[in-house]
Image 1 (tube, chains in turn cyan, green):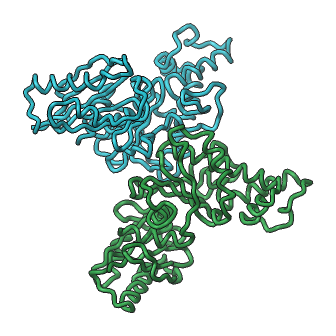
Image 2 (cartoon, chains in turn brown, yellow; image 1 turned 90 degrees about the horizontal axis):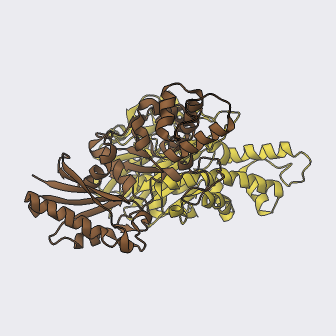
Length: 313
Length: 313
């Protein structure tokens, strides 16, 4: 029997999963992320938690394929993390080496960017199982992206491949994106972006009847209203779909993937979002990529730990 | 000593190069492309020409690494070509197998799309030597593109990765592109696209003095006028740069390459074209890819035979 640990490091908690080498999730738990002191305790805390589980289960070192880790920042091919604002990590350092050194035994460690790793998780055991060329976009507060070619994550030179949230949509925004640029896809098609579009529609049409007028402004309410055929909500959904579908048509023109996976909180709202995306995708994509499949992610919040584990497979 | 043949198949002629396995071009020649009878003679003609050279030089089969071939159409990972309009090839078939069967001996054959193969040529012995992650765009009558990740061509599911000429620039054109869509990058930034933009400027400004008024309308004259600080030409160059620079910023956001190589006839006009591209690239690209290098291709028209040979390396 072989075992592998998948660790998904977030700004408030660290999720950890114990998997078999065949991809069965045996157990999952989480620990808080301690960002005090420039996040110095994060890696030792992870190692201690993993080591506890190894001891508890009586796993032998020879049975452990290793520990994979998804991190909220760009990680290059050598395991160097450049910046992880949410973890208070400031200096470049080799995160694989540092976690490895926290273990008594000889445990293999691999790390990757969380959005890339989530794509690998879906490729391994989720919506992308059986496909070799995959693009995944994660629609949350921001937009994350991951590219899998021939079954492997495309990392990029600085660990910044798959930054689909920050491709320019051809239209400047008044406010800059978190990245500093104006007109990033994330400003239109993330949960935050949708709410921005929704606010605009509400303000520009103060007299239009809509079930969204006195509700909390969030993506769930928006898509519930779309399901109820609310015209204002549908207009927002169409704008969302225009930006995301057109952006993904460009990504598909460059990569010609088999499948595009839509993940993140917004995707959990259901298949209702897909036609809004594919309409514009099909209009603009190069004909040879017109058959690209669109599906929603299936691993939900566990995508990160699956993908982290898959780094060792 | 090891030898490898690189074959660049075009609609009017087939260029063939004999290389050492180390990448030295020993000899190059060309034969006409016989498109009669649905291009049935093309592969036998290539095999005969290569076989003649093998016999003439007295090369031993054991010394020959193989024959690589760049083709004007999408070729998938299994060597299946979908369509090659310029060669009058209509049905899907395995082009690697068919060329291989034309040889008496046991010669290894690999094939790829010509734009992808040109990128591999630059990666092997041209402007991309020493880099692992490369994007190349070839500015000619159309725009071709090639993506190299970890030293290997990204082929895509249907052999259609790297179709950078057909990414949507966010603005519809009156006339459709050759691919059927409207608003493809190729319609703005290829040699043909530049001439279209130039015509528009001339028609919209009939009284403006410009050295381009009574000259043949082509990319060379345009860039010569840019070098002479002709204001109308500079406006066209700026529009060209906006579309190409912005489009490449999206490609870099997805792939985070080390280097972007600009090839094709237009690139031979000199480094004058680069700042027009990089200005918009830097405005819109994700910060982690801001240092992407821009260079012009160095292999010129030989890029195709170099890259075809490199398929066997």
